[in-house]
Image (tube, rainbow, N blue to C red; front, side, top):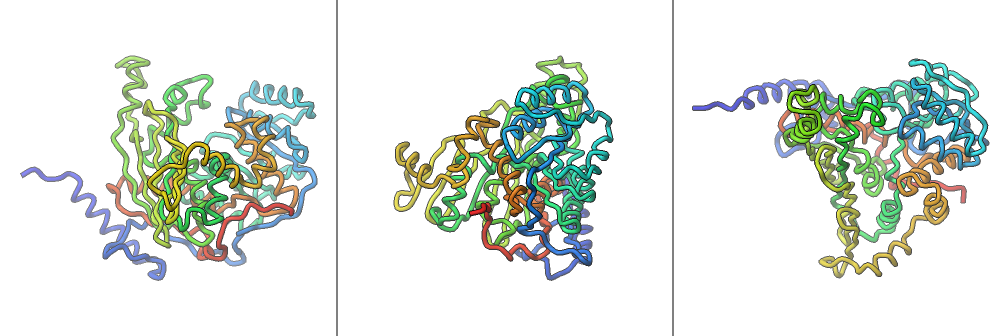
Length: 467
């Protein structure tokens, strides 16, 4: 009789991790129909002297002085967009590639903005964070530096905005939370998809009850990146993103799909993500592409890429809602973030077909004319305010500009930011949590409560304005 190679190791892992569960607080253990999830990330107690930073407010800043660290694809765009915002001033540019700094300086010149101080050293970001004439550190480096720079910057008294993901491990996510709580500094992840026009309209619809109770939502990052992953020049610096696909298997980039639906579902503002299960397909796409582009015997074709082509992660919330997140950057498919909200009174979806269906005709899509009328009616007030300017400036159709505009607006007026450190921690932690579930054949993994029990102190997400 042939024996399964997976059963014995999985059973041993389950027993070991179940025994580790017993070391934690039983009061935080949810019921899972008679069996326990894989639990390797317990929620630690809040250190003495710290309090939550939900809806944190800081002193208003007349002109937000910005240092941009990392001037690759995302950093260059940030230089241009921020130059359109009167209340922002770029005072420092940092990159290990001198030509990238020169290009950013040229952008400032073209925008009639003063030149910024230049930094080129590998660790020069530390010197920049230590400057007391900088209010905001804007991080656009490769993933591995996001959390270390953010933590160091907050410790120096700076507010922080970082490209996604904010962290690539649960430990880093906790370090971000603890540092933000201890220093009382803003820490925002630059999740631009929260500010896309359809997503903001459906957030407004959800908050006004158009969909009833949202029961299920779906998001994704389905984007064929193969040509960029293997490009030594003009792609990801030093091919860092390809290395993540070599070394890890899980939902490596969940934030674009998860961010907008997490806000629509009031995650950590009345509900919380409790546990997840995650599975990945086998890896086919990167090897096939490498063979076709570089030859059967090439180094790229011989590498062992761990990341399965499609990862699917299912999340259950404390209030019984479900979320599906998918990740695939290696298949020849049209781009999609899905963005689907399904409630007791209606349904909305952006990809592959943009449409809305509402009671009492939930079986049918609204006509194109009715859809456009509904989107005009529920246009988010922030889009009404700045949408025309955003389309003019651009950045993924304008959502990047709205993101930057809102960041500077809130800092300028001393308002809570639209996204907080708990958003950054929760959405980023899905990376490692999904990896654990994938390694354990899709077994449940509990999601830490980064608010440490404060997730129900609010009942909705609020994008604050001075009015």
